[in-house]
Length: 102
Image (cartoon, rainbow, N blue to C red; front, side, top):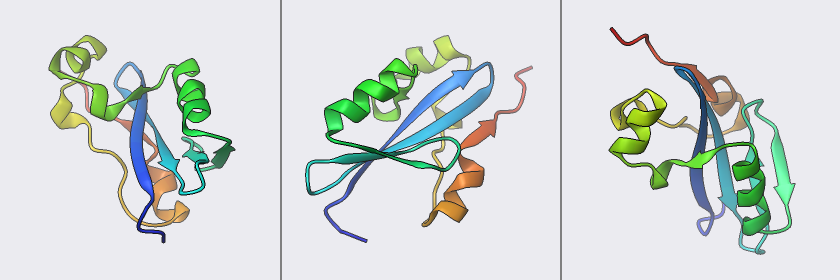
């Protein structure tokens, strides 16, 4: 893997279900998004990829604060992005149902 790769995690929510997407900026100035189905979508630039994610109502994880999380029905502590190497490891983690709040 290239050490100059920059990954950002994005998420969308439906109730207590987290839907993850990974935005990866590549050295060539292009970008790719790993979507919740585990498919890599290529983009000609980081801006184009970000626009596509925002159009799909995703928000950047690093842009969320406690109030944003609370307004969506969860806490920042509950937001643990997928981890590991390879699509086979990440794919089953891209959609996560959070426990019900009591």
